Length: 282
Image 1 (cartoon, rainbow, N blue to C red):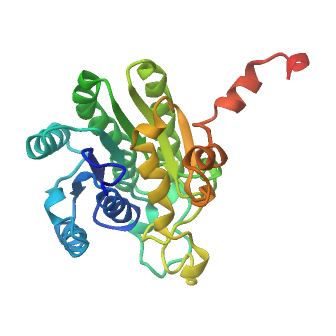
Image 2: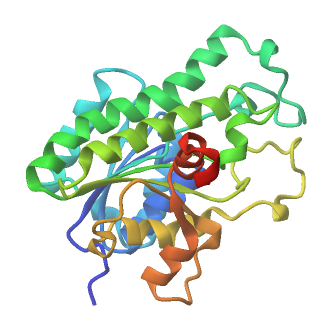
């Protein structure tokens, strides 16, 4: 029996580790073809071997690239279309935080003013600019065929402004704000833009051993797969400008009901509406 994403083609950035690796393998298991993009060739090889072990080796295209480079995104999209004949889904997952610049046993990643200019710029480049570049390159084929998905992986809203989480939090806030503006511009085109987050700290290298030695307290990356597959399918037609919290997705419910329970407006839409309404109308 064909999978729910049979015939669909996706690009996943940051596909070598953590959430990206799990989402790549989940899309393959659902029948999709995937262009897996990663800066670290060795990590990407691990994802490719896992795909082969799962019987999906012929449906994965490994692309080693730095998605912050202006020239990378068009080449990635072109490679995916050349290999698989089309493009349907872009998952902007590549992301870094200050933990990746520190020793793994360090608990506190430092104050905002202790961040170096180089570290700050790199986080903005990966978490904000790369998503823009990839989206800009992917939209022409998606808009031409009148169907497609842009899915950004951001973070919990309170993390966006939390002390000790900058500039990561602010970069993800910018990412999600940009996506919400894009979603409004895409209305009626058949292409949608949504956010998918784990719903808390996930068991990836983004949370160091020093920050959380007990990995059992962290969210398993596998929670991302079920909502991602639904978002990448025709079942999510018309769903636009929303954020989905993966840990709230109940696989025992019909997908539409699970989506309703796990979804909310992206960014700060509800708060924004309340802020501009007169007191007597709140």
